[in-house]
Length: 358
Image (cartoon, rainbow, N blue to C red):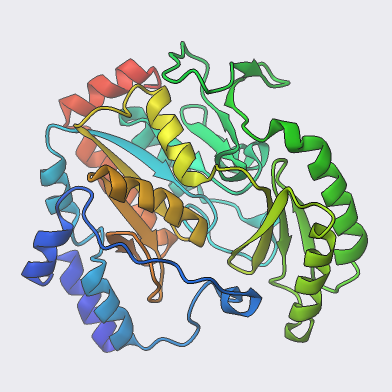
């Protein structure tokens, strides 16, 4: 522990291995590491469960702290436009046993609100759009629920950049819904949800979460000896619905429509909606903690510029270039970004164009 504390102290002061910094501080740099296919047991804890401090410190050398590297990152971002994208669970709020109680702190909400005053900001979550908006409670950000299959923007003029995107629709409260690529799957999703509830709820501790365009089966409170039974049960339901597939998160199985759409596509769509997709001076900042966020990390890596940041307290394979240890460090990073942005004229003008300054 002492070794790790010293390492974190050095990172906070910006003391990183110089050769690594040179590589990582270029916007959009980072190694591409493919994710290996796995099964339920691999994702029980969202990654390795027993990693010593030396291994973590070694991993941080390859994925430097975004806090320790903050000043260098901002120097590299000078004269460019930043757009901020944030996962919710494990990033803005801690992972909890009961997903209905994954509340973010008032301090975190205030930090996100401040960042959104200066930069286009979006929450991209596997949760339903309505649920994540209920948690975040901010009106000056984009909300992309169901891994980006349900995107809503604050009411403002929207310029479409791609004819393939669906036309604008209104939700029940009159808010603009920009994109719902899996809308045609809703009737089938309801049938899958009903079938899962009939079978899965018989397993003690299992929880079904309706995320509208996808379904989450949480097993954080399931006994270990029942993991195999749960996995077999979920797969038996999906055998009757070949248009859906199963993916994995941190102690959660997710059933999604088999369409070419994920958080990376959502990131691209949001940049396009903002008119920033073809701009060479735009730096997307994406902060997330789960396997599904890797799709967004990959997009930023492919752009050749931007800052993909993973939130993790243990080493894991990732396409992210930088790291933060936990949501408390995410809070610190966002507060620093908000403070830095107040002195940036370019961020102010972009926020005014976006129309979210309050």
